Image (cartoon, rainbow, N blue to C red; front, side, top):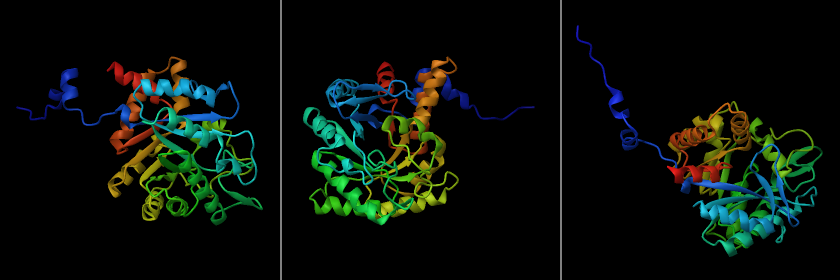
Length: 325
């Protein structure tokens, strides 16, 4: 009896054949590299829970940026770690805050680099929440003005993209209005449109010193169980003027990335977050996995799911690996 079947393996016979029919590509241009800047001098503080990641004072920023440029990475996102904190996070919107000074330095010395400014208050508030707190509650509407002030101060410093990560209702509209009124109508907003109250953020909070001092962020970040809510959140941000839509975290939310890609025609950004990074680093250090193979497979899965850009702490490693290929 003759058996009829398809021969899919014909297209897998060699490296060259597999490359010929490959559907999804990861490029160095897709990567956005996170940088943590701290006040002071001669500081290169290793983040214990994130091997290879450092908090850098401005005098170490040139060394870091020289490496970024040499690897062909074209975009960075800047996070600040201030010395002073208060209940309103005033250093977030100070014209000479640590993020603003870092942005000025990068744009002056490396004008070709796209600088994304993280726009939030949690690193700057004494309570560690992303907004104004009263009687133990994070207030939505009074926070919007501070976020707009922060965005404008970052745009004045030279930020190419404003990336608000706070998840307050109406934050995109408030920031868009603030930017436009200040003459920065040309500056796009990369909205953390779909940001879950995830357990994968722990190492970042070590790096940014942004852990909440009480409670958690579940009243403003999304429940990981919810999928339809992601579309509602993204739809609101599109209506309010977002230019990019971000999903955070990425690895456990590939279905959400695909949903947004199918629904909207804006660039989709995935944040490959600190917990995802640290798990792979720990496993690789123990010899349990092939770090390069796992990272490239993971980031390619994000591209396959529909993301256009990836914020990742692996950016420098990936850039080196892609050069090798």
